[in-house]
Amino acid sequence: MWLGTKILCWAALSTTLLFVPTWFSLVMTATVLVGATLVARVPRRAIPRFPLWFWAGMIGGMIGAWLGDGLLIFMRAFTLTVVIMWGTAIILWTSPTSSFPPTIRTLLSPLRWVGMPVKEWAHVMATTLKSVPLMRDQSQTIGDTLALRHYALRHGRGASAGEPSLFSHLNDILTASLSVAAQRANDLGRAMTMRGGIPPFPSSTPTLGPWDALGVAATLCAIGGIVVGATYFS
Image 1: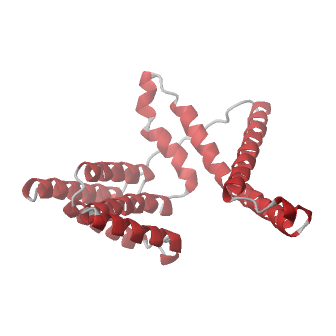
Image 2: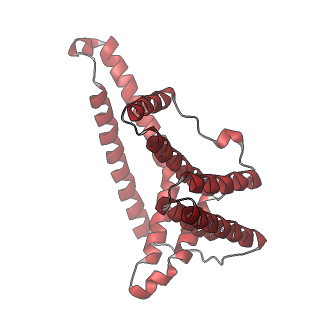
Image 3: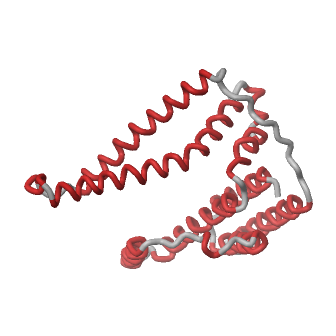
């Protein structure tokens, strides 16, 4: 299925779900997502595992909602969040990163008639996606460096200065990350300028097939079911 079809189908379905966030709508949307997950053969290891503090917070939130007579509202809001994240994750799991910029450019191409810089937006997105692994590795390096520094302060000459607070640790990581990001952006801008400015964007032609028709049909059926459910079960 073409990436643009996935984005448009999920945008239509998630927008309908946000306007009609009933349990029936959630079940209909979750059914479509289950089918998409099975057809795409998403491996189990791709599903993220939430840490213990997340579940502890969930239990605390449920207890607070139950004491305030809002347990059902809390559970529905949580389920809605999970469904929205699930649908977005399916698009990311089943699409190569390199296909996002040309697809976004194709989808937003009508905005060029009103003077929007669609080409520049696509280039920014492409550059951002290429920089994500670099920033991830750089953030890991910064975190390890600060951890070693704080370890030296606790067990070395700086032990008398006291234990560094969590706020201080996060502040150091944020400051170092912003500094590295600014330096990387400056280096990238200089390199692009020396090579003649923004490189030519690769042209791509959408390839539509039976899977696109099936995805559109499933989306329309789900939206129709949500509308009918909201009409007769409200």
